[in-house]
Length: 184
Image 1 (tube, rainbow, N blue to C red):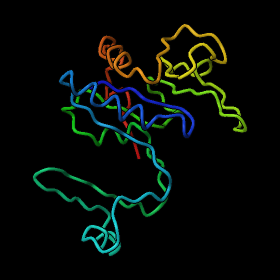
Image 2: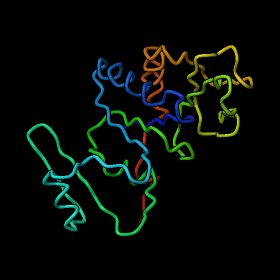
Image 3: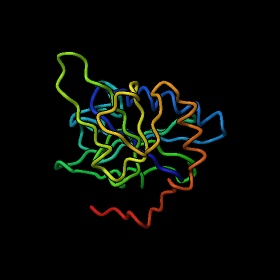
Image 4: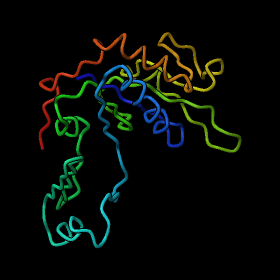
């Protein structure tokens, strides 16, 4: 499988870019999974649902499946910081691409999403000059970057070009699980 991260400040457009990139890759016959970093108390289940009731009763894990999907929910007794590598290890191994949203400090190759802050917003320092894992940049202001760069720069709205670049350079993004054996 190939793994590429998408990093940037909140509101920069990571989710939209990933959402638009998935069908570009799918049209090329690629199977795509997504790993997303979430805030502390997110929930995908709702009061009254069977799975919610099982978790509230104390189940460590609840797996629910149908002929169309499977979901696994796991409750940690203590706060647990899982690395992106733990989450990738949970994925089905028949996937071609894993798009990782968030985890901006990970040791994965990443595309940085950078936008000039709007008037009145605090400055958003670009990371591409300081993070050796950033291999490309997606922005809506390629002529106004905070500093010059030799990495590829993509228009954030040209997901076809970014998708083609990923496919053309897939050999750079091959994920070898043995290089990232997670431990808890």
